Image 1 (tube, rainbow, N blue to C red):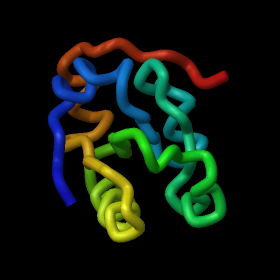
Image 2 (image 1 turned 180 degrees about the vertical axis):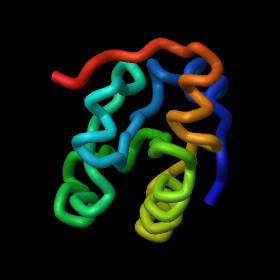
Image 3 (image 1 turned 120 degrees about the vertical axis):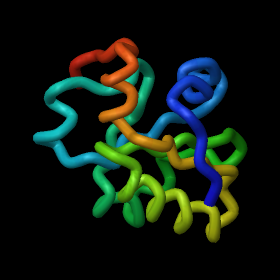
Image 4 (image 1 turned 90 degrees about the vertical axis):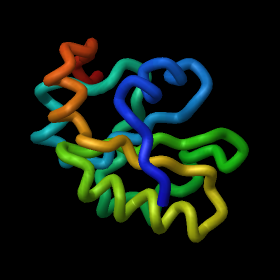
Amino acid sequence: MIETTTAQTAEAADTVQIIDVREDFEVSDGMIPGARHIPMGQIPGRLDEIDKSRPVHVVCRSGNRSGRVAEALGQLGYDVFSVAGGMMQWQAEGRPLVLPA
């Protein structure tokens, strides 16, 4: 599993898939613009929503869950990165947020 920084995720947002694996109550405070919300426990049943031909950046609150999901997706052949520091780091840097639909 490879980590990426919030800055790298922000720069690549137009070319990568950003998967937010936090729970519903966590994303209600805001998500990375363009991110898709798939709670960690739902990943196995929703793999068809993640394009294997494009890089994937996985984010959670602090980086722990995203690391586990990134490791699992990597074993399935995805080009995947865990966002170091997660949404805590994203927000600490003052990066933009959107409310979930």
